Image (cartoon, rainbow, N blue to C red):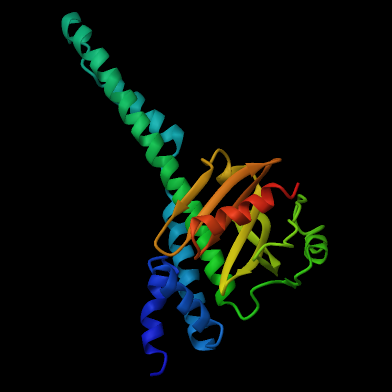
Length: 249
């Protein structure tokens, strides 16, 4: 089968496990092969379904509080004051330490979940035969298209003098929140810029640049909106596009 070698790489591509050159090669092949494009979309949709299912049954804060209360009630009331003096401070230290570790892990997992969702949206858009809903290199055409479709407004940067080329835009959803996805070309690479209201899943995310095997991402908050830049390019390119958006307002 002519595409057998490409099919074997699709899982790694969707999971963000390919290096930049391999990911770019797969992305280029998807533009010319409907069969592989369909397979990539199926894998991306399956991954998102599994991720959403995994988030469905997380214990609530009330449930955790009840467990902690029941645990405290079962402690022996016959313990001596001496042991209480020794154990209570130690137990408090342990509880605070565990709580801090849990909070750090929870925030890390939330950030990874958000970036995984956005990486899936980025891959799905590029694998689609129609990656954008509005096709134009003119920001004055793309920006008005979003009016009435999303509950906020944003500015697009002037690209004159830069290497970036605006391809167009499409609607995107992070959880149940609607937002904008802009796609840019840069030296045979595609970069997505996502814009959502800075609340819900995106609220209080630490800003900055992160790097996985396949993608580099940057996020920041500005004027009540959360911006994400993601692509199979280096940190300098991601930050350059980010700077253009930060200065567009």
